[in-house]
Length: 373
Ligand SMILES: [Zn+2]
Image (cartoon, rainbow, N blue to C red; front, side, top):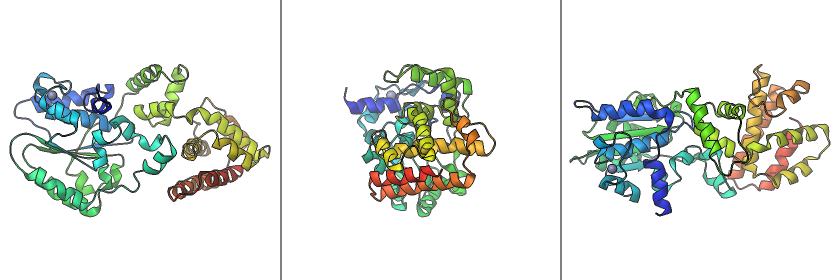
């Protein structure tokens, strides 16, 4: 079995995520029932790490499967349609932007949370979707496929739908207003607030956002327990903390646990304290951290620490109970404006890195800023 085949298996034929079971049976029963069908346009929206893309690609595979009636729990994996998906050449499936086609990108789980898991310097420059745009010509290029008529179901998937330009959104709107028999559109968005209201009002949102905390806890526990390279067994309190830090998104919690920077939070606090007390110079701290983490990862780590500092400054408890953040803040709490200033520096550093600023230079600057946090 080739690597590519394994990858499509992960996407189209993966086990259903446990918190999506109810929605899955509702939708599939609706498709299988006589006289009923799916809405022509569906939106999978919500924060990263909840499994939106996993759900959509799995449902797409099932809808296209030739023997779906006999396989209500997921595409069969063997029929002609499933074979086409495996080879990435399904004639009844179109996806935008092109990087979203599972066979040409990361798997759907990882892609969903790619922005928080940049693994090397190269990917820190390319993982960002900031420059991604879905243009009007991209939408127009779909039209012949949508309007070709004929037998059988056809499906379009628009990932990162919020990245449509206004012209692209207007072109899509026309399509949404003229639903074609047997044509289904799936929109996926991590930032649905950026979608045009006129688009949102013409698509039916999939109820993917409510996740039972007990199911989430169970899933993350099992996933981390079975991760071979995970350093040690993770306790229940640690897992609850991960889920809280990931805003309740189970897949994001798992990614967080596996991020190389997550285990360096105590070290970050030690450095911060040493810088503030003058026990360590910013140059020494910079040299040291450059051996520990890539700059993007250091920024992610710093953003997490700032998140909790903000919480404390607003009178909430720190989410992180396994490091001495709350204790340190009791003695010396940075003001809100200082927190905001450091946060701004982190954002500026990200922009500078995209413009090819040297990592060492960026690290030196950030450590200087950290002295006065
Ligand atoms: Zn099949």
